[in-house]
Length: 105
Image (cartoon, rainbow, N blue to C red; front, side, top):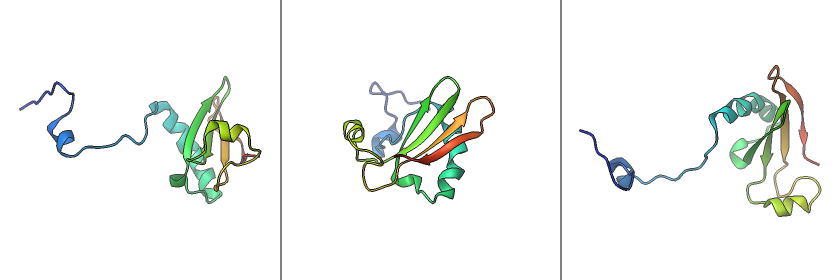
């Protein structure tokens, strides 16, 4: 039996409401996977961070950011804004190898 709802919700979703915790293109996931060992090497718990993936012509940068800090606050502070050290990993698009990594200053 197929159930179609005018609201777009299945019976399962109605009985067990869920919350979206991430919404990003699947292509971003490979860059996060490449950067993850570097985060682990620095003993950074990615569960405590907000993750951004930035792309330019030749590289992609994965950044761990403090979750409660706004972009406006971040612009007015040198270094990591908030209680956690912010860290970035830049990856070459050509060979998918890490170009650089470091703490935000």
